[in-house]
Image 1 (cartoon, rainbow, N blue to C red):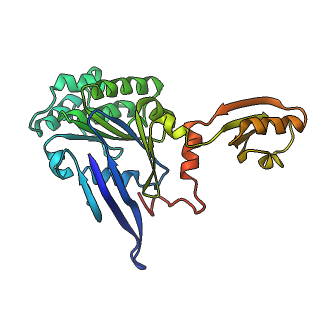
Image 2 (cartoon, rainbow, N blue to C red; image 1 turned 180 degrees about the horizontal axis):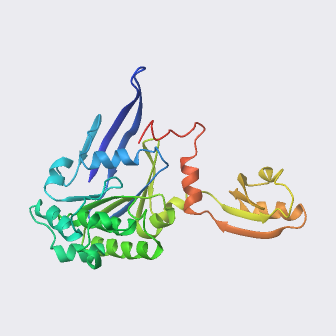
Length: 306
């Protein structure tokens, strides 16, 4: 799949004619067999990018290609499957009936038993779709996404309703799907999920790509590391002025300092007196994400961009 100079704007106020660019000049190429996570704050443009990728919307500028074709052609050919958050269960049909019907609309669908097994839905295949739990409903959505035997699967918050064990089983299935040479693109708010299951992470902010690397590569964009201490009833006054410190956060009774020179920060802390609960660690993916998406202006609301 390829985005080339893609931009998309939405009007936010019909009276004033004001519009906001939800996707702003995005260039992105994802190759066969890659598993890629799409991260971003609410309103960063993730949903808009997915909509453009699936042919649900058209760019104002630039082009989107899937397997060398326009998105809608690739979707109709069964080359792309999608698991979206929105959608209501269909009443009075079983899981087996629903997946079989969807599969019948594609030219070369995956065998029904294989679909149900890969999605983890075999055990409740004969239950009505509108009688399933939230986690089971997510598995059915996954099965529907796989029904056409796609080469690319796009997943929007795929494990939102799953518990820890179900999430692990889901990603085991996704890895098996990817190991066949298929491509997986998923959006998530779970940073650890992206770190564990994607070889590549793309971070969107205000409609633009601000990072495109492995989890380790993105962590390295945050210089230095974190220095944590117990405040022991005291305050954090002055800690942000210590050598190397570029950020300060108080979490409960602890101060966490982001430092470009943790050694210098620790020496300065020792010079101030007793240091309790000292912990020095490298920056996490969350720290890098927050640093990459930090901005002086407020984030756009979901109504302003998608």
